[in-house]
Length: 401
Length: 161
Image (cartoon, rainbow over all chains, first blue to last red; front, side):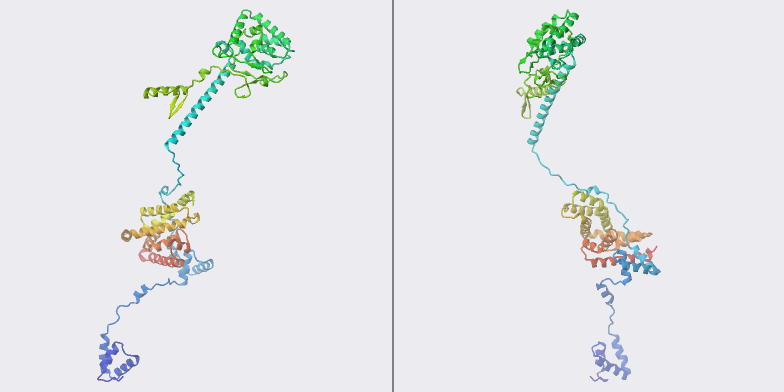
């Protein structure tokens, strides 16, 4: 390349456009130095070249993505603030902070950027968040519910009737035992009352002497009667002796109550006729079976005199309604206890003794039964539906009697 | 997770989740909706949720619900930001907590969530990464940037007490 005063303009333009190589640029610069009058012309060409006014350096720096650039101390502080710094480094950092006041200020500033966990906010409507697992639902059709209800009602009805009957029967028995005067009021026979009490008297001491019996007879007619009945049932050896004692007691009684002597006898006959005859004598009747299984009416064994003597004082004679003597359970003669000899036959399936309840007709009339009958009548009247003797509920008919 | 464990979760974590969401959304009703949605989802999936991880599960679900909510209501959120700014300019902030709350509001949702999960709930980087779907180094970098921004806001001359 040769530059001279004829072709220098071309070289000057190439220089300004930066299109020359380093050697050519140097040649141009040497030419300008040799011809200073042309230096001004080169400068004017360089001046019209647009400068790079917009620097992309800042923009690019924003575009760059780089990992955070922190010095090690600052990063250590941030890690310590997050609690992620290992204990060894944390110790070193603490000592460095304590040694430098500027670091202390820096550390305090970083600590201010940490949120306070005590800054609580309460979610007021927690109830809306609670949940409960739904249990398994089993659907039951209406007719099943209706049948179940009917069965329950039926069971309730039967149960109430059963317990009421039992209560009434028990209360009747207790009444008849507890109120001796009832025999008079109900027209019961004293002779049969005496029979009823025989369970207690059967086991009474057989070796009691005559004096004791006499005194007892005069003091307590009931016990006297019991003794006389027991005498009729004892073995053949002792019977004569006891009969004698009985006669003695009867004699004492006869002396005291001559006027009443005949009445009880007739009553005893009436009672004999009425035994096992519910219509005639509802309140008192019982049969006793002896040890050999032969059914014996105790009244027949009792001498009339004894009967007369035992029935002289009706007010004091108890007339229990349905006791039963189970002679099979009676121990031999030496048994002294009253309690052991008496037993009820209600729940004993092996016992053949018959029991006649007192006022059974009235016991069956319960309040519930009456109420149901009223309901039945009302329904019949209103619906003009004719039912049977029973009560119809939900397609079921209950017998009212 | 049993019914009892779920209800214990309600007792233990409902307030924390509510605070986490409310500080992000700055709207009580929206925060309540998000919290209820999160608990509802946990109830539905209770058989798959391990009781030991119930808290992080709850925060994860709540965080995702919150992000969805923010995306749906971006315009409203911008208006809120504007209102917040104007209000902030008008008032003289006099305490560090208020300034810090303002600085927190300036952060992006992700940065804000990271700071709150770290400071309020005490999660480590890995746990925060599980909740937010970031890796551990990302959590660290984003969290440190957030700290720098908070610091820059706090040390501004108008905020210096």
